[in-house]
Picture 1 (tube, one colour):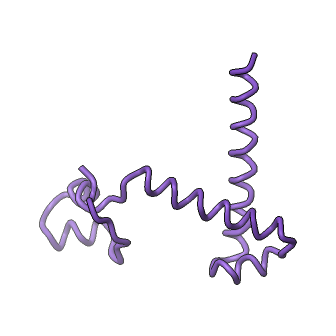
Picture 2 (cartoon, one colour; picture 1 turned 30 degrees about the vertical axis):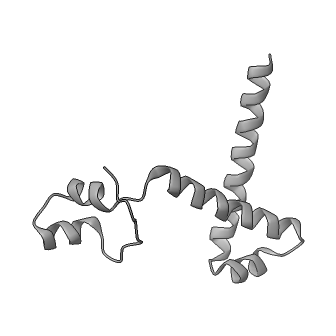
Length: 96
């Protein structure tokens, strides 16, 4: 069971478990963001970074626009490339 109306929490699962007197796993089940929502949010971040890079922005400019570090921008772009390569390989394997 995942949270029906998930919100970003400011405390760790351990802190909440101690506060509520339950296990960490109970906290995860109650407040976790649904996986599909998380994956969609992550894809949107990667796509935004790739889009800005395609417009010719530097990593520093992308980082400023997205309010993240340059390292995060690099990771997002790297992850997007790796996922695209993987999808291409899967498509080629299915076509064979």
